[in-house]
Length: 553
Image (cartoon, rainbow, N blue to C red):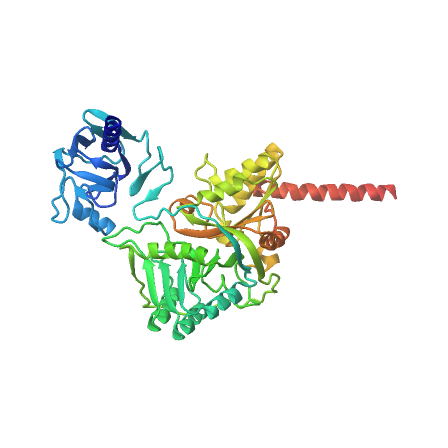
């Protein structure tokens, strides 16, 4: 019996001594010459005989070292701290007083585009990673081992890795812009008692800022997070909003790339708000006059939803706190601003907010879980309705993955409709929404599949533009989000959305979609080379008909 127990103990000792693997590494970080590159080893036990090498240099741990769990080994401990805000467990090239050294042999410096790492124990290769064969590196990308495969997502330094989550029996309010977005926002802020966490790409509406100021004056603790470098720069109207909020004791932060830190996302493009740790408002619209106009005033077409659930709110609170916790966060500057001049074009409200209950909700966060949009499209069985500000393909010969999934759904019999914006800057170039509509419809015509695309008729529907990023699948699932259908948005931006499964919600947004779809037109350009002959032909035919009728008399 003792002999068997001894063998069992020996087995576990040997197993523990060998159960190490590389689970994370970054060969091409942002600092010049990559002193902050690192490797994470996972496993428990003694490290005697364990070596990590790239074939040109390597290191081993000091004799008698025992590891447990995850161990980070960086090339330079001080550089790693500058990038991550904490020290690694070991360093292989630096000499920082706070970081123990490993025993180095040769020079280990991971090549950015082509190299390999081997984990060896007593001349036996336990693990080997080669790139670009096993992974496809790019600057700033961190590679994570999931099970026995490397995560295919492009996850960069500082980005979060939130897992998929589901929430049940959720109540709330669905709304659309311009019809009812402002009243829902106003009510949500008026109901706040303790806290508001607000993350939005752009914030230029002074009347929305004043609602937050009033909430702050009655004791609500408010933090606002903005994008520090939006396209075109921070508008002067937003600087006025920042100044108004800051002067009234509201903390306003922005996510920016600085001399010391690289922002983890191309853009902080999310648009959500967490209230009192139990409500979440999510929308496709920025906090601007055209996204949240006063009732009876025209603006953008967008979708939004305000959901009541503590667990869901906690999920979004964690996202907010993560994004506000890095060195890329700085205080926003409100100098040199001017107040926004809102449009006052009248608008007849068609869609009042609608209450929902018993909803099934799945958060969709870019880049963490944006693949859920693809999954939603792939699972469609009857219909897909898509309303987007724009869609861009990956390249001339590679279709946007979301659009490709929708087209493939149509090929299996799913009725697919795609509605895009027709605001001037989305149709003036040679490769934008009107060309995308033609591209989609050409596929439908060539293959005879139930697929159609249109550009919105903004004048007929009295809308400023389509700024939506929404999808309805099978008449029972809806995506409300900030995720544009381009390459950057799902892969490199911080975006936020939810997939809601609930019949009233789906019917509500489908009604708004149908209203926009039925008013839409499909732009049919006629080449100038053929326009005059076509007119002349029509005139000639009309004259011939007239001559024929006169002769019969």
